Length: 87
Image 1 (tube, one colour):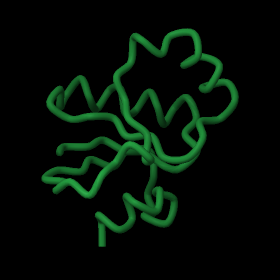
Image 2 (cartoon, one colour):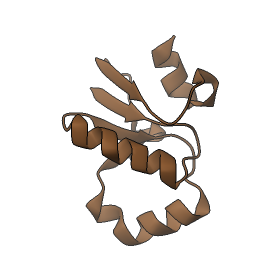
Image 3 (cartoon, one colour):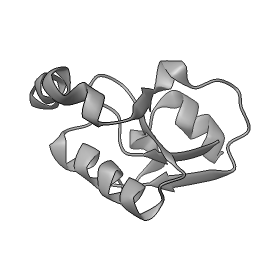
Image 4 (cartoon, helix red, strand yellow):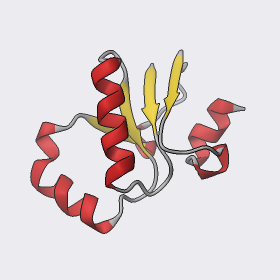
C-alpha cells in the first residue's frame, strides 16, 4: 500500500497538500488521521464523492511500501497507526 498522510485532525491546507501530492503520485492513497476540522468536515460532507481517501480506522496491517508525509515537520503530529509505520 502507498500512502499520503498529513497531521492529525487535518484542516484545509493539510487536505489540500494531500490532494496536491496525490496529483504527483496518483498510485498513492490519501490517509486522514483523526477527525477533520469542522470546516473541512462540512466540505467533505458535500463533496466527499469527488475525493478518494481512507481514514486511519480503515488502515489494516498491510505492508506499507511508500509513505509521503505532508504539512507537518514532526512525527508526533501523525496519527498513532502512522507513527508505528514510521518507527
